[in-house]
Length: 151
Image 1 (spheres, rainbow, N blue to C red):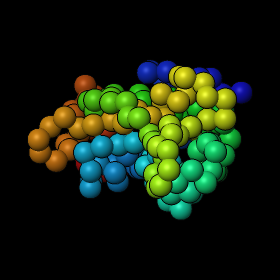
Image 2: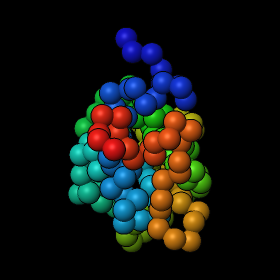
Image 3: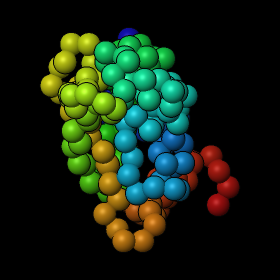
């Protein structure tokens, strides 16, 4: 079984390149990265399933994510480390049902675990006024430069 990713090891995790690509794609058009957008960008969730959940036709989001819960938890943890390195600011959002009727709070998980619910509901915002630009890393590379690419 794979060890839990840490701040020191998350970049070597097999999920990291996919998460990094999804975040990069989001930041090219937006200043806000959400776990839902990352899941859609990784093709683990479809926009149609998100719409169904937002309208209350799906009881909790994890039910329609094409990924097991262990891997999903790992993905959320790596995402949090990565956006921290990009200097994005966390902001918790209250997700409410769309459409007519009572605007009840939407659930992300079957169990309703507070830590997981908060992990899904946290958006990461680029605080700069201009478009996103990656911070320089201490090793001279930027977060968007892969180790194997030519200079």
